[in-house]
Amino acid sequence: MRAGLLQLSVSDDPAVDLPETRALIREAAAGGAGFVLTPEVTNCVSASRTRQEAVLQPEAEDITLAGLRAEAADLGIWLLIGSLGLKTGDADGRFANRSFLIAPDGAIAARYDKIHMFDVQVSETETYRESAGYRPGARAVTAKTPFGTLGLSICYDVRFAALYRALAHAGAEILTVPAAFSPVTGAAHWETLLRARAIETGCYVLAPAQTGTHRAAEGRQRQTHGHALAVAPWGEVLSDAGTDPGVTFVEIDRAEVARARARVPALSHDRAFEGP
Image (cartoon, rainbow, N blue to C red; front, side, top):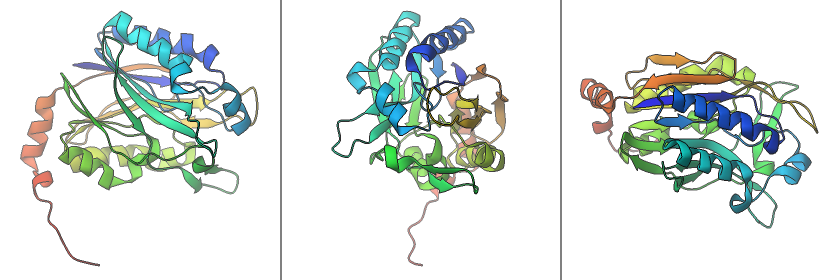
């Protein structure tokens, strides 16, 4: 299976960005990709809660979800929408950061809500409080496809190795890590974390990404790291998109998962232990 990883630089206006995203998905499909992946918050990158409140919609009304489902059906491809910011109707007003796997007929095959919230101060001038605007998910998700079983995750999840080990034990052969990674933490940790998750589990890791400086009608402009990566089950980087928007391609062969796990069968060596 050929996969196409999208690298986007979306704004805080979903209506403006949707045609550009659809065009890149068509480019990926034209390049032979039967599985296309978009990054985290494909519909809106914004640092302003008031802007998010104005432009985000519930799942049933989200124009990006509807448009990308139609695109997947038109092209007959599997599509991972890395995530969308969505209104939930929760009493506290928080949004969901939700990933969708779309089947070739346009149906939603799986949903996953980001579990780990990015609440960090990476520098004196760069602070994130994702949990102030987004509610955390509570359920890990795998999804079977003809080219392998996917284990879904989003961005900051990548720092929590236990999640990926659980996904691998549940049958995952391909781990998806769509992201909008901070430039500071991205430069320091992005590739290392993705390679570690692949090595620990013997899975492919596919990580489409947001990149660059994101246009904003309201609030400060966010910046993201880019470098959408694909990592093989043995840990080698198969592709790195750099910092420009576009599509990168990678070949997925589930036999490579079996080979890596046979060479180092760590998943079968887990042992219960006491303490500390």
